[in-house]
Image 1 (cartoon, rainbow, N blue to C red):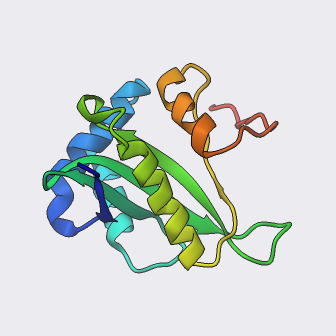
Image 2 (cartoon, rainbow, N blue to C red):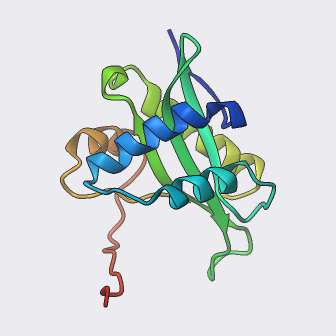
Length: 149
């Protein structure tokens, strides 16, 4: 059965929280409850420059998520799309959920007139990178970040 990709809804709160917690746990990250509440509200908001959320369903049950946002780019007139978070429940990996979510973001970007979609992952994320190598292209960029005080 193919996954159904749809926008996040308010009644997805418990499933979204479960999936996002699992995503963050993979990256050995825990966040305060206020971050969960804020992010969920942002995902449901109507600000076009804020985050958007997609959910993947199998048999009517949410099994994956994607968070993305549109932003300006100094080298383009059009906005570009950043896919920040992508997660599929381990039980459904290899079933097309991840690919369908990325394609859902591609479709949202096309609808918004954003020609570019990009994302990052950690070097050790071999499982996801096998998919990314098939559906995207590796760029030569290396990410730097401001050190925390």
